[in-house]
Image 1: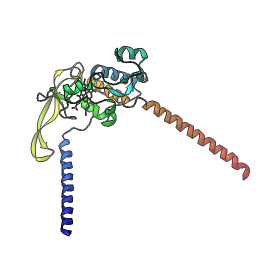
Image 2: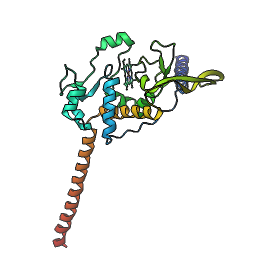
Image 3: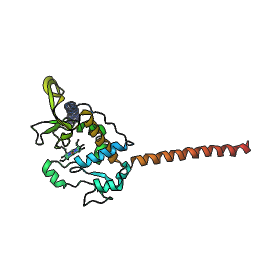
Image 4: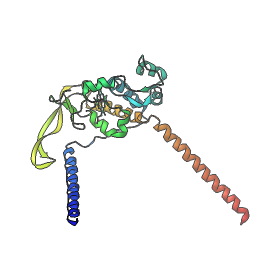
Length: 257
Ligand code: HEC
C-alpha cells in the first residue's frame, strides 16, 4: 500500500517535471518570433481612422468581418451618412446592419483551409502591436501555398493582400543558434530586402498599416470614446456632489458649536 503511494507520488512528480520542460521548450521555440513593433493608436485622429476604414474596405472586408460595428456607427469616426452609403454599403446591406463579412465562411474555409477570423475581436485578443507587426512582416516563401509567410503567425493561411502597396520582401538569412538547442545553428531570418518596389515607400507603408490598426482598435469597441466621456461626466458630478456635501456639513455644524 505504502509502496504504491510512493510510486504514485513519483509518477505525479515526473509528469509535472515533464510538463514544465515541455512548456519551457514551447516558449523557447517561439522565441524566434521577433519582438512586437509598436503601433501608434490614437482614437482622436479621425483622419487616420477614416483612411484605415477605406483601406479596410479595399483590402480586408472581402474576407474579414467586424462583428462589433454597425455601418451607421462609422459616423463616429467622422464619415457622413452619405459617405457610408456611397463607400461602405453594398446593394444588400443596410445602415443598421453589422459589418459582418460578405464572403461565405464555408467558401473561405474551402479556399484557405481556415476561416478568416472576425477582426473586431483581434485588437482585444492579440493587441494592436500584434496587428501592426503582422501586417509589416509578410515575406516571399515559395514553399507556402499562398507564396507568403509571416514570422508573427508562421505559415499563415492569409496571403499578403497589401503586397502592391509594400512591394515584395524577401528574407535575409543567417545561421544563428537554435533557441531550442544552443549547440545547433539554424538558418534564421535577420531582415528583409525589397525585391520589387510597391506603390508606397517604407514610411508610407507604415502609415497605411498603422491606419488600419488604428481603425481595427476603434472597431473592437466603437463606443469606447463615448464611454470614456461618460466616465468623466460621472466623475465631475461626484466631485461637485462632494463639494456641496462638505459645504452643507460645515453650514450644519456651524450652529451647533
Ligand atoms: C483573401 C482573404 C483575406 C484577406 C483579403 C485578408 N485576410 Fe486576414 N486572414 C485571412 C485568413 C484565411 C486568415 C487565417 C490565417 C490563419 O489562421 O492561418 C487571416 C488572418 C488574419 C489575422 C489573424 C492572424 C492571427 O494571428 O490569427 C489578422 C490580424 C488579419 N488576417 C488581418 C487582415 C487585414 C488587416 C487585412 C486587410 C489589410 C486582411 N487580413 C485581409 C484571409 C484574408
